[in-house]
Length: 201
Image (tube, rainbow, N blue to C red; front, side, top):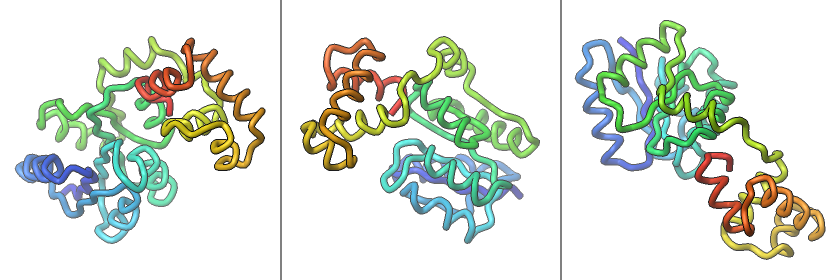
């Protein structure tokens, strides 16, 4: 029996997925989590074979949880499930140790097949997303530019960003300017929007 962990913050979606996967004769959902920062403890406690992780969760994103899981429990296979078919998310997920990346509107049978394939050592990636990720190219932002843009999402001033990130205001301005330029944006708000849409934040 394949032991599954299902991490999804929307309880209705989580319960529906658990019910669908529970219909598979060789699968059992043995653990559920509503937050990304609950994933590792749940996987340890229930000795899971495969973790199915949503990307957008409170506490920790599914990609961050995947990286933690991959580091601490490398034998657990990781399937990222997302509503957001963003190429940058796919790249980040693969770099974090995910074995599969699927969009949630895929048929349930496809998900069950993906679970079996990753246990056999295969990687499973939504083909449309794979093509988009190749066409998109790599994230042009440096880690620091990403940090500053991420912190700027809520409209913080340069002074507030500098204080939060322990940088000078001039350095914050430079990082924002470089990010805006790389993303061909008109201003920081547009740069944040573009980076989010591409899954680069």
